[in-house]
Amino acid sequence: MFQEDTLKDRHILVTGGGSGLGLAMATYFHQLGAHVALCGRRPQPLQDAADAMGERAVAIPCDVRDPEQVKAMFDELTRRWGVVDGLVNNAAGNFLSASEDLSPNAFNAVVDIVLKGTFHCTLEFGQRIIAAGTPSSNVINIVTTYTETGSSFVLPSACAKAGVLAMTNSLAVEWSTYGIRLNAIAPGPFPTEGAWSRLMPDPSIEESYKRGIPLGRYGKPEELAQCAAFLMSPMASYIQGGCITIDGGERLMAGQFNRFVQWMPRPMIKQAFEAMKPRK
Ligand code: COA
Image (cartoon, rainbow, N blue to C red):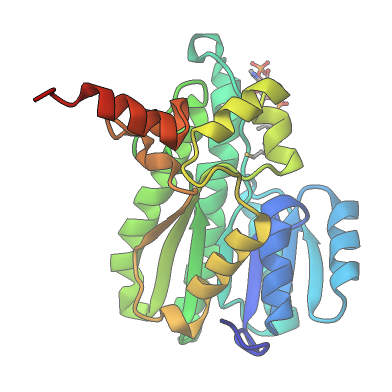
């Protein structure tokens, strides 16, 4: 689908870019010719990842919760590149907890990274693009499939990601004036080490969870990376304020009779339906 120079001359910052899905997206942007900056809190994994990519990749340690650090990161990238014209707000925090057991600090820990961190980066990005009059810039916000429905046991994340989607939609209209595109991607289950160690209690749950995904498997990081590359590219130039769900169909399982698919193999379902037909 993509030519090797699809993202040539783009300068893209990926927050949480040192591991997992952030790294997968950054690696693919880089393969498609972009300059990429990996931002994260731990310097060494970031540097290792940037070194493995080689030229056109830079590691920038930064805690997105801190607006001063975010400003310094954008200053540094502007000095190196002249412009940052692509931003992926991917840095996130999440953990499973009964909501009645959350402390105010626990709520803040997630909201500060996900919602405020996204705001800090988006604001720095937008202000600079607006001041420089840079054409063809865009932002991708990574949200979740429970952004709209909410979800048990991840209340801080559900609240923060809903806020990020509201930010995406608000700015997609407000910053269209400046030609900035903002879109979101809502990934379903992607088993990265960072997410799974916090969100999947044990292997038996993992197996039964998989049966609830219509495509019968988890997502692969490169599938998310391809989706992000599309949104980042000129091929998506008329997509504004969109949210692409990438979840193997999982979000649709609420459909009343969809669970049959999960409970029984197809021949057994058909047999059951046959037995229910009125006898003539
Ligand atoms: N259950 C309940 N509360 C928890 C928790 C858990 N699993 N993990 C942390 N907390 C609470 C802490 O108890 C603390 O609250 P307290 O001061 O009232 O005790 C608060 O959250 C802050 O914890 P701390 O470890 O100091 O926060 P941090 O800022 O260092 O870490 C997290 C932030 C908690 C989100 C951490 O998991 C993180 O940094 N994750 C980043 C990567 C990630 O989550 N990736 C997965 C994305 S899907």
